Length: 623
Image (cartoon, rainbow, N blue to C red; front, side, top):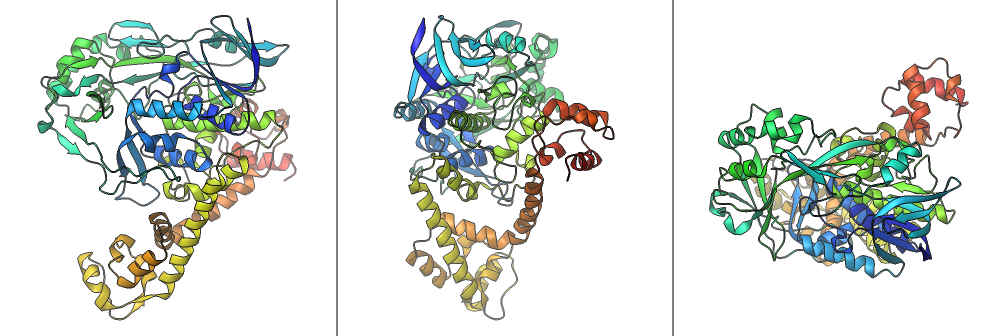
């Protein structure tokens, strides 16, 4: 059977990548089909019920600034908000929200259904429809042919997914859900290289069986913030998480199952995430530590189900339960389901262009875990970029690529395309060389106008951004002109351990001092009155404060970024013959031929390529 409808974009998979891809392409005007195995699990949080975190929070803010939906849905389903790394510089501040898992799914479904350009189809995609080397659409497990101009594969952990639990394993893409088969073999036959990766999840617990009095309460921020730059509501009532710890006794019990662990017996071939290891990995890798921190996180407001963050495992169920009951607060705990590991297919992302279109098959895009990444946020931003570019290409419009100095999204995609990955890739602030420019507070300044030009971000967003920038400039002008006397400020300076004033100074000079924040200075009546009279919001205050305190560092990064941009503007001809570069290293020649960098900037970031190799390349292309 051939489906009568023909689509501009077909998105395969209803996870975080698939949702953002479908929303973006449809909002831009493409007739879009979202195909998923189960319409009831769209946007499911397969692992922990939270969005954001170190560097990940910056990505969610960037998605929102461009006109994506993840930030809005996070705000609408949030039950706790925390700004991580407040004690460090603003480049490290990272927002994180604990979410209600069911509400998160519901809100995403509502957003997609509200877009008339999005159709849905419940089925498993078994094969890509390719005729005479041209992508024509997909073929489902039920034998349905669906035609489309572009296909975006967002398969998550479902491609040949294999679940491991102790000595048992069975096929599945997620607990209780079937895996998908067929596409991997076809892609390999088409010339793609594939690999295997592994991820895991902890047991889910019955919150009624936990003694919280023996744990440490972790509350949300006193003044909650939010992710979206739109008018989503700020969370008023927050729900606590709790902290407990493993012990040597717990570790000894877990070690009893190591001979049955698929991690240590070699049954799992794929590499797991380095920075989110299983509890058995932690015990093995950090053998000098006698305890590890465990977070007790609620799955939602109207459920007692608990996610045990930090206790990811694939050990046998009986070992898991025995070990859990030796943890403080969990002595009588009951499990809803055991933790498990899942192994799945991925395709090394060096086979992609920066648009996330594959180099081998035109109009075929990969996004999410199929590219070797881990995390909802990493997947969602790739889906957004793939959805935008599928629409742009179908309509002969300019491709959408963010560079490394513009967004964490640009860093992530450039890392994948240029360096590749053989272990699950997770974003960190340390991966961004211009992280002071890529702060969570200025994502709208960096990206909202770009989103508006595309047609994703509304005019209202731009108007709101303009007000924020204008208010920041007004406040800066006031701080530069308005003085403060010793009588007004010295008691605060003494309290903060800062040098006292002997005469009047401009308020800006006080703001530039370490450990003195605008929040503290609101005790100055003239400043407080000015802010209230001009209706200057928290966003504008934060922008002004950061600009004053870190202007020297920010300017240095801007200079460095401008040099990078110059290199990015030097294009390398698409069919450049690297074999004629006799003077470069054989490794550089091999990498150039494999990755086929589009610019000198990209070429310079390839592992194993030296500055001398780049100089020779510049000479050959006439620069």
